[in-house]
Image 1: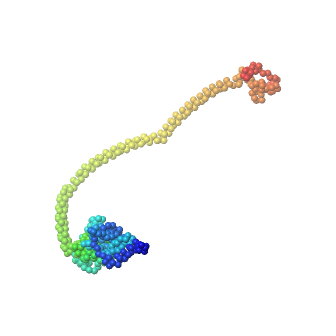
Image 2: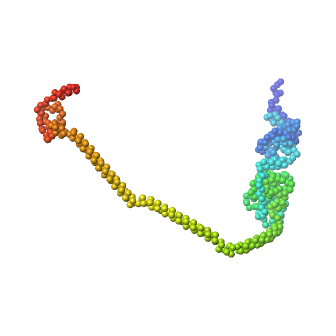
Length: 458
């Protein structure tokens, strides 16, 4: 076999894809089945899933541009009606359904979207809030609706008939179509943020669920829930319910009912009620005046007014007791202060200059006596020590020895202790007890005894 008979995988898939593309029966296909294998990837992504029945399954894809226009969310197991075309995905060689439109099987898509969004907001708790009361006598009402049509006329006519003194301000709003959501949100925020209104009425007349869908938008519902001003919702007919009704402070089945909820009863009835209340007030006040007059008469007959001096008897007795207590307290306080002054005087006397001077003089005399005594004792002791030293010194004095016949010999001012220190012809001084003798050495002779002693020592 030649190689030219073989096709590549790409060539085969391209051929099969061309078959799918050219087949008119596969160009537009209507299927009914159940969604399988669905996992949401968000509104900004393509969605991939399968459609199956009891015996077969086909892969499906819906591109993000078409998916964003679907008003409800796909769910696993949901039965749907699908319109699309069958094509081949070349990379995997598998065929799949490219979805152009998808609708719930048996239930409208808007109803499904309404139920899904309602469930989502309910889980968030957006519907569980304390509803603000509608003022009984409003001064200013904002109406967010179309400036033309029966709705705005019914509201204005009913308000003028029931409560003509209130001011009505209409915010012209688009309530149907693509621009409706942004218009409703904008005017609700303008009316609420102005802070000038006691109540806001928002709504429109009847229509299909598609016509009323702008009041089921999530952003509109959140805007109504965030309003600080009480909001009355009147959307469609009495049987129509919207998410705006769920988050509003009050729901009105019709525009006329909304106007009646926002205003009190008819002005004539209100005036009649005021008159009735005025009569009742006169009656009650008359009875109160009668009651207080009787109390006044009884009070005037009381001894307080007939014998007013008795009012002061108890106070006089109390005053006498307080005067006695005051005198006793003053006496005790004075005695305490006297004792305190006496103690302070004793303390102050110790710091009197005369007392301190006498005390200092006594201390001076005592110290002077002690100093003199110590001085005398010291002089006496030093005299004794001096006498003892003089006695010892006298024993060591050369004069003491000179008086025994000894002489002190010196040569040129130096003491001569040995014959070895002089020689013949030296001039010597001989100190005796009563004077000096100047002599000249004629000769020397050493002592034999001293020489023997010196040898012994050697």
